[in-house]
Image 1 (cartoon, rainbow, N blue to C red):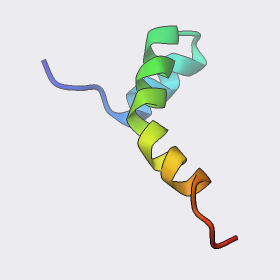
Image 2 (cartoon, helix red, strand yellow):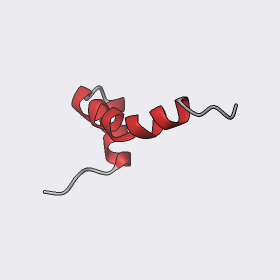
Image 3 (cartoon, one colour):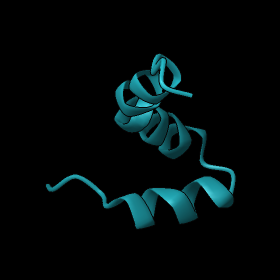
Amino acid sequence: MSEPSDTELFFLALEGDKTAFGRLVLRYQPMAQQIANRNDW
C-alpha cells in the first residue's frame, strides 16, 4: 500500500481525521523548523 498524497491527507484532516492531520504535521515539521530557525528576517 502506498503513502497517501498530501492532498488526500489534507481532505481527510478537513473531515476530522486526526491521524491524517498528524501525518501531515510529521511530514512538514522539519521544513517548518528550518524556516522558523532562519536568521535572515
